[in-house]
Image (cartoon, rainbow over all chains, first blue to last red):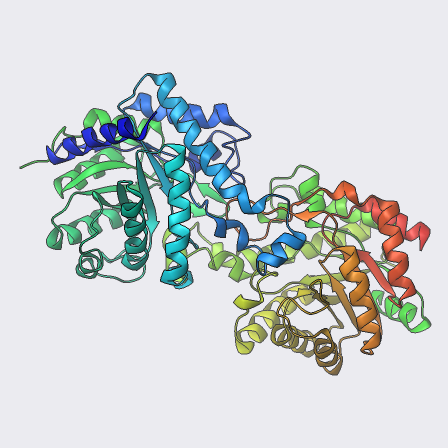
Length: 314
Length: 311
């Protein structure tokens, strides 16, 4: 697949966004692995290729226009963080740790592409899922802008080479880090969406108001700004706040259940029909891209596909 | 009483045998690493302790490395966020697991019928943050308060003494040692060293030895580094007048997961250090003056048996 046809695929998706069509994003990957009896400590993209492929395939079958890769948290820092420094990692760490993140990114993207090929749905876009360089819920741990820039360039380069159609920067916690990521994506010529974690007061997790977010992203606005990895009511609230100040396309994918590290606790608070009712409210608040975060399943995505309006209301 | 027996041995100049890797051994037995295996597979945790006792360990260490409230809190934006999106009671989980882990060691000793013959239970306390990251060390006041809390949990659950393990910098070692001594429990302090013999914080081992000796540490040890580094560090400990000295190296290479969920004791390539080879390294530690000897991550009951028979 050459880069030209990749761009065409995304260009068609962008046209649909411009026509105000509602776009369906996939649901959870990591928690879906747990639900299917896999653990997630090595992403399993290499060791359980069939299982990962079938999760992607189920989301495509459910009606997702965009599927995201099982690559959350893969960056060189993910391994380096376990050691005192690079020398220490080389001295006592397993062989190949420095190259493991790009290798798993390559494998993760390959699984999504295989699922798309097997489903014969060439128009489905593949989003390279990448979160903040340090822990997604800890804005205080974000590296300096200089370090961030170099690492985003490197990681986005790995996704681009592996053949993603766009980057999905998800579970971001500040407009500052989003800005660095968006600039790096633009430099690399890769389209990008950003998903922010919101709190329960209509702000980002780091306390930024939506007005601050709008200012922080000025000039580098993502094609779609989403909220993710927060409970349903928080996402609804954040979308309402965003709509007051932001004029570009928005979207949302909430989590369902509870974060029980290192696992996900599934709850029955939001079965597919109830999740659909919430998502309909998001569309009413201007969300144009809708999917599911941790705890959601292909059944949730199918419900969205069947039940959401095809277009944003005028 | 159990600790008295260990202390007597040390006073007589005898060797004391520690156990080997606990977390890495639980993982090696196929347990999915969640809550240190304590909630879902307590029988495996207990069996690991039993196997180390059968191999001849004089001291068994609790399965509590990196078990503290921070380990969970760190994964959230703060306590409010944890309560908002985490499961109920997560903020109390670490303390509960510490108590259960100590009880498993106590039970193993009882099952082995070794209560009366001097086997001691060491409550393992690690740095509050990731043990290889001295840069994340909390301020001394917070260190002191949080270590004091863990020491109390361990004391009430029945440990004989505390082993401050894998300490990576002076300030936390000091705070933890003070907290341990304030509880009245004997304390041993073990440092993780770099290839150059310094702490991971790059502070000299000599200063660390002086600091914890002054605070009443009864044994100063080095751990969680490859055998060759441990050999060099033992020589340094002796040179700096550490008194009773101990050593327990790891084997294999630390192989962390791609998901950043904290401590995950996977060591790969441990076959490069079979028990006989580990015994050779341990003989050197003994020759250099170490009297407390055992294994860190990656070592197994077979390694400890080899030490029991060969040292």
